[in-house]
Figure 1: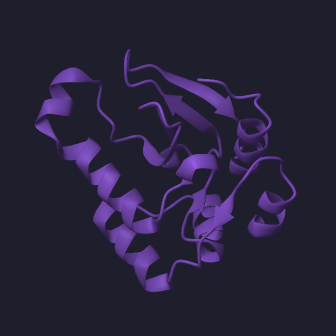
Figure 2 (figure 1 turned 30 degrees about the vertical axis):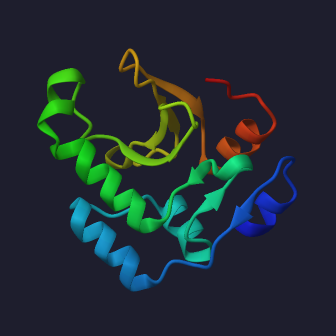
Length: 141
């Protein structure tokens, strides 16, 4: 489903081979919570989606685990920003801003985190819309 959806959208994208179930389980264990269903489903089809110039539309499962661990535990980041525990970062805008889900709510909404002012702004109601709106220019950061 995901690779077909991405393939019909405008812009350059490339999909990676699927993430293994073991890698998904390991990520969930490292994060201390399950991945949202949409993200897990996408990762089972593609362990990352790259946009033009290597933009990380969806990071690999390994990068998702590593980036989120860093944001949740780094003491320097804790002094600069509000807590990141509620966010699950999964991709970036290429300018320092990142995209996140809020898995503990059960909602599928996508938010953008602005690294300059620490704002967290709603940008799409789902991962499918995130792809569509980002690749068609409706989301601008």
